[in-house]
Length: 88
Image (cartoon, rainbow, N blue to C red; front, side, top):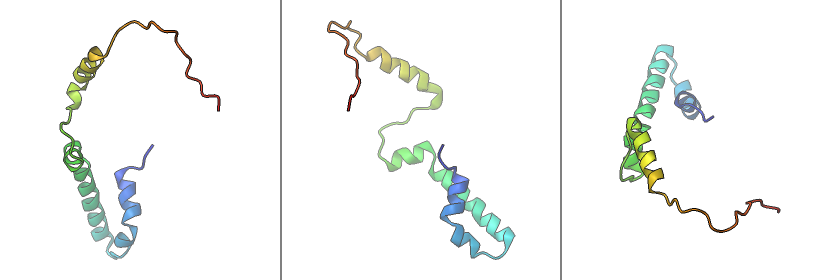
């Protein structure tokens, strides 16, 4: 899987954090950076940054996926099914 935000902050800002000599102050700065990363990574913030038209509440995702699947063509196949094997 991908790296978590905590690890990303530790690696991305390790030099900045290393310059802070007081361990308590360093930890506070680290936690502030992680909180900022979590806030910036929320779906609505990302959607506005990448100009998405809409976001789906996770509680409603089943409804939207079912609606999408119902809208697909359901015509029976008339041609022979062809295996999709690449023989490169």
